[in-house]
Image 1 (spheres, one colour):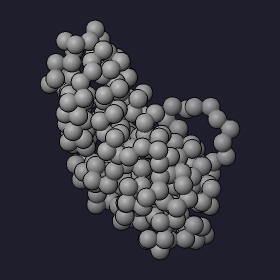
Image 2: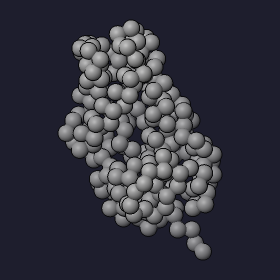
Image 3: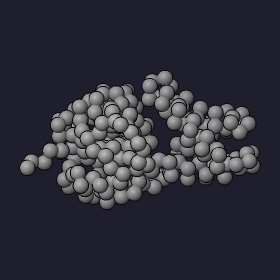
Image 4: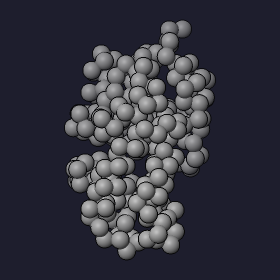
Length: 231
């Protein structure tokens, strides 16, 4: 039987690169550096507030309702304001530091390197991400993953965010792949899975939290290791 898939497209954040762990580690360092723990009763709540606000603002960015320049500072400003800290300069400084430090973090989703080693000789591997180009390139380099991938398509360079079909079309056409031979792997049912499905390519939903859903998916796994059973 001929091999069906030739091109494997991965999401990056929360699929390969452990965004939540890396972000929390970075924020803990910034809390210490800027003495934020002296300004609030529970500094760990600031990390929770940041992640919550960042998620909401990224949704606006994904819909084209916010620029990346505004996003980078606003997510920290409104998080600080929740703790009674109104300081635009501080928010901007922390935002700049976060962008510098966070991509240097190297915590990966379990089994990432093992599965990339397994797939590399069998398929052409690619990234499709809503992240910023420069930031995502740094993550791949610092985690020594860059050599595994033939291409990386970012929403920033294409001008469209997942789940828009335009970004999937750009990613596939730019490497001369065909829909029938392409597979998308991601952790977000709407952004990665529905986006790929609407474009007409098969999908693998990495459901590490085992959330209950009724969305149609081609494959569903709770560990990257399970890709060995599919590919």
